[in-house]
Length: 244
Image (cartoon, rainbow, N blue to C red; front, side, top):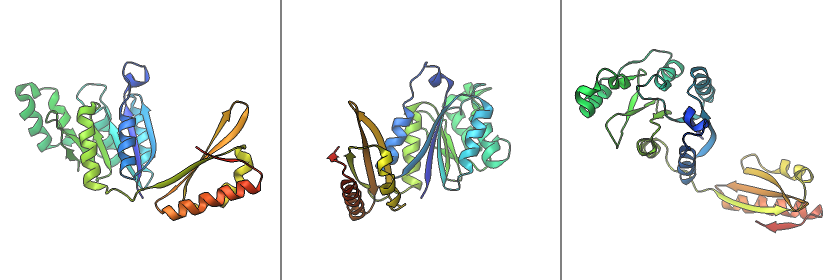
């Protein structure tokens, strides 16, 4: 199964000048399709930081990445050259079709700066921009690079997901509360099959410790079976079970 990562580049998000909207969008789009979002990073426009983040994601053989921001023509737009270095080990080269699109959009004003957005990693495929004709790009149908503007980026993401990543079977889940500490439930947790999606969230209700248990899988019967097992095992320990 693919492991989806999102990388949101923008110092202005971290210093409070802008509020990020990309995470909520990509997280919901992946959930709607039954796809697994395993990591999301909001990072500064710093070359070494961007490079290290990309390298970490590349080292996951099942990774798919959606990157937002940093593909423009200003000096702080660093994504294109760093992506080329990390994912292709080659310098940027002129993408003829991207150049034509930028010229068609801006005419003479494409020069001398805007046309630099047509300098892309070798083997880059273009992502359609519904707002203007300046494209995003992708590499190897795994790594997708979009503008920082949601109106431009989000249609690119949806198009890529629809084209390359079919919706997965619906995930069934059960959640319930056990009135105890997580420590008292570890043996039960360890007995659950690894293919289940499982999480335990400790909480306080007044001065009482509780654990909110979440079990999910595409097989509804398996979810029901192991939820029942967990509850029965907790009851044998004298714990109280409540619905969320």
